[in-house]
Image (cartoon, rainbow, N blue to C red; front, top):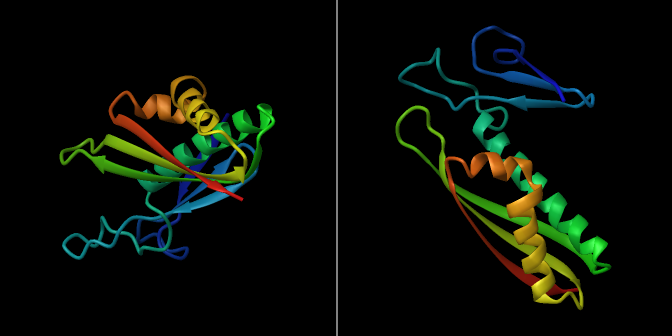
Length: 149
């Protein structure tokens, strides 16, 4: 797996904190910093997600992928899955994630709650590489709700 991240500045200028990530699979992702009035040279233009937001989003994608796949393999009729991640970060550098809560909402027909609980646990404990890495610094918690389609 590979990824190249290049500084773009703001709208092609070299004054800002915009970055373009180009993935090995041929996709691109923009990232930007928050504006900083006290230190304009450190601030971004708020044109894209922050790099740490993309880490959190990637973790959500990784674990939601697992949950859907596990439920499908169990032949459950999954029609929707979302996960809301709520994170806290350290106040001092490096500002790592210190806690992350993942709340899953699964929509389907006649899916037993135990199947969703198992899928979430398997993702968290065995399959999701991103959450496994973040669990090195962050207390990870999960919850879920099941909605009938």
